Structures are given as structure tokens and as C-alpha cells.
Amino acid sequence: MVQANKLATLGQVTAGVAHEINQPLATIMTLAQNNIRMGEDNSDLKEQNLNNIVKMCGRISTITGELRSFSRKSRGTIEKVSVAEVIDSSILLMKYRVKANKVKLIIETIAPNVFVMAEKVRFEQIIVNLLQNAVEACEKVEKPCVRIRFNEMDDFFEIRVSDNGTGIPPEVRANLFLPFNTTKPKGLGLGLVISSEIAREFGGKLELEDNSAETCFCLKLVRAVEA
Ligand SMILES: Nc1ncnc2c1ncn2[C@@H]1O[C@H](COP(=O)(O)OP(=O)(O)OP(=O)(O)O)[C@@H](O)[C@H]1O
Ligand SMILES: [Mg+2]
Image (tube, rainbow, N blue to C red):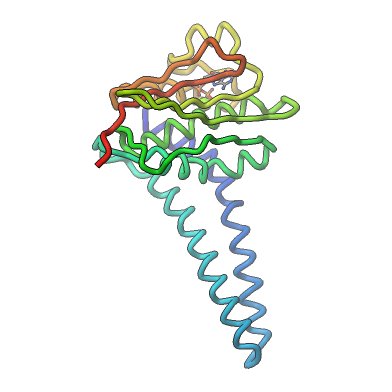
């Protein structure tokens, strides 16, 4: 089921990622055509173009690499993982959808040396699921806004993903973490079940926060000692 949710998610993010790749690709094409047109002249400019091409290729390979590692079956080893790294790569996968829906994404800053016990790809899967729900929930609001906040505790680390969207109807709320509970025409109703299952496997948990004006999910993971 974890893989089913991941493949469905992948299907949804791929269209966005394809756009994300198209942009540097178009730039590479233009730069390369310029170089051809210049023939023997302007070697400085040509070198600059080539450097930019290399940079753009690097960007594309980061994106495709991220997609590949996300689609791979994870090894299942729970180890020390950097929260900042996972947040960054999840956002890379979600960036286009966020932009396309004109969602304001506000992410609290976090030090790169904050670690939790998790497994990178499945941790990403949770964040992508939460972000997807959040973005989908604020599709029809006037000023869509999604926030990611962090809270350090003694033994745990909390990551909150909230949105100012439609909120969760009471009948959905009652069965929120049960499979196939969905209000979306194309939804599988697996995102939250899988995410909370993964969180439990990491020794943490995923909960809906009730005391918040926005819709807010709190992912609580075990802190890993720095070393
Ligand atoms: N941030 C949110 N705001 C409003 N409703 C939400 C939010 N997150 C989840 N829900 C509700 O909970 C339901 C279940 O969410 P879940 O992610 O498990 O499945 P889904 O999004 O419907 O499908 P998928 O399997 O593609 O994720 C959603 O259909 C939606 O009604
Ligand atoms: Mg979902």
C-alpha cells in the first residue's frame, strides 16, 4: 500500500516536475543555438553560455534524481536524517503545483543539523502527502497559504504543515486515518493512512491539530542525537 500511494503521488507530481524540467531545457536550447550561430567569434560569451548550460543540466539532474529516488522502493533502514534536507527535496517535487495554484508557501527556517530518526524517502512521502492535501484544500480560497513550522522538544521534533483552505468536514474528520476515506474525485484516500503508518514505523506519530484556526497536521518524530 505504501508503494501504491507513492506511485499515485508520483503520477500527480510528474506533470509539475515535467514543467520544472522544461524551463532549463528551453534555456539550454537557446544557449546552444546562440553558440552555433556565433561560429568562431565571441569565445568569452560562448564559454559563459557553456557554463550556464552545465548549470542547467545540473538542475535537471537534481530534479530527475529526486524523482528516481522517490519512486524507488525504500530500503527501510531507519537512521539519522536531516529534516532540512527532506523538506527541501519534498518542496522540489511540489514546487510546480504550489506555483501553478498561486499558493504562498511559508517555511520556517531550520538549521541543517537538525536530525530525526527516519528513512529519507518515506519521510519525504509524508511531507509530500501533507503538502498535496494542503495545496488541494486551498484551491478555491482567495489568498491560499501553506505553512511549514518546526518545533524542537527534548526527545521529539515536530513538523507542522498547515493551510488556510476549506477545512475538514466533520464526517471526513471522524475517519480521517482510515483507508479510502476521500472527498476528491481522483483521490485514493490513502495519503493520510500511509503517512501515519510510516510515522508510527519511525517511532513517531501524525495527528490532526484541533486547536488551530487553520487546518494543521503535526508530524512528530524522534530526535536523533547530533554527532
Ligand atoms: N489539509 C486538508 N484540508 C482539508 N481536508 C483535508 C486536508 N487533508 C486531508 N483532508 C481530507 O481528508 C481526506 C483524506 O486525505 P488523504 O490524503 O488520506 O486522501 P486523498 O487526499 O483524498 O487521496 P490521496 O490518496 O490521493 O492522498 C481528503 O479527501 C480530504 O477530504
Ligand atoms: Mg492526499
